[in-house]
Image 1 (cartoon, rainbow, N blue to C red):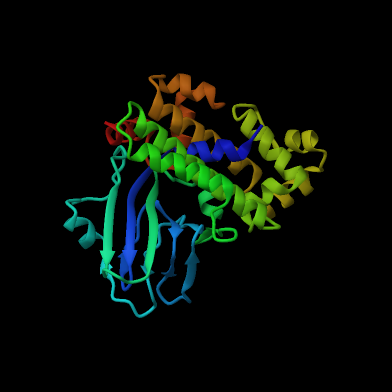
Image 2 (cartoon, rainbow, N blue to C red):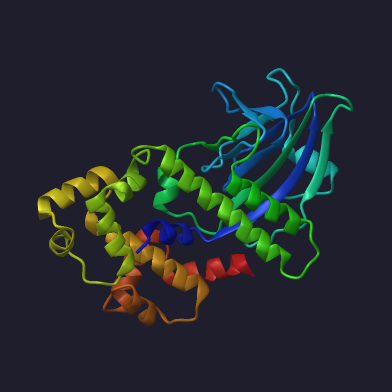
Length: 321
């Protein structure tokens, strides 16, 4: 019973390594808002990260940052360095579009930018792209910036290992290389979320904080292990050893949702994956996620997703074609 794995799996991550930059000062890159979660890894040197109207953050060798909500930002050699849009830089290298749903990762670009003799920085940049990030409790909980700092001028061992595999395979022509790249980037994202949880005493609020509470974490585990069960607040309270009132109050305070709303959301996440991946009928999917009829399931799914299950299935399959 591992709710974090379930929720991360719900993201249906399509990670893409985008560029390996060799940058010599002065240089600056302006990155617009993105529907995915951009990431940057400083493999050598240093640079600055700048959000609009926020204090800049210095990044050094070994640092990994992830921007979970895709907020626009700048990477700079110095705070007064001239910048140009990333789209302009990519266009010079023959790239006319960024990631779109269903796009497979391609061989990454090697881009050199800046002067000839300026201070050197090497940065690996990419995007954690999601097929459907709808109401995912991990993404909703994460702050605007995740940072895994390096140690003594090097990346953490797990980051070095995953990055080495990712880079080796990204430039490889071996069969299956793109699949290995996707899985290596998956590891980067999951490990980053785990590092965030470990560094935050309370999980930084919301769903992650609920997961770290022994009783509410057990309730979440039970819901994820048996999403189709006929859960009620009374039954869950009995299973975790709390009164109905205490469970309802603590669950809402920590997770930010009622118990039964969370049960419904978990069922809908599972149904969304079944709709996208398989050929099961609506009646079969309804039964698998705890509904007695496809009519009641369709009504619940439409309320959650904003569209009927059949329409959702066609749209998601169209993105993957």
